[in-house]
Amino acid sequence: MWMAAQIQGMPGQPFSPGFFPGLVGAFAVLCGATLILRAAGGRAPHIEEDEEAAGPPLRAAAAWVLGGIAVMVLLLETVGFLPLALLWLLGFQLLLGVRVLPALVLSVLLVAATYQAFTHLLGVPLPPGEWLIELGL
Image (cartoon, rainbow, N blue to C red):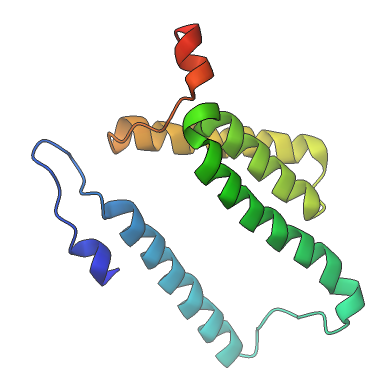
């Protein structure tokens, strides 16, 4: 969070480029503090100790997250944020056992909210994808 706060903004830009990394850092600190307080109070979530019962779905979800990040890095400009983020989030939820319709609805809402927040609130346009540019959208 400290390093993100050191990033200087450009004139006319409502937020500095460090705003989002600082926000992510703040949420990570908040989540960590919450887990520590819950554990100190004896309310820690149950962790499945049976490796065979908990292992494969968690490993598949972790592989999906890491693979999704790699695909985003490679294809973000070509394919665009909207379809890649939608497929990534939908697939992640399905791996975790969320039913298809709720996963689809949540994915669409979160991706649309993220796109709107970056584009309109933060003034940081996300890549639309070359195919959308060619279509004139």
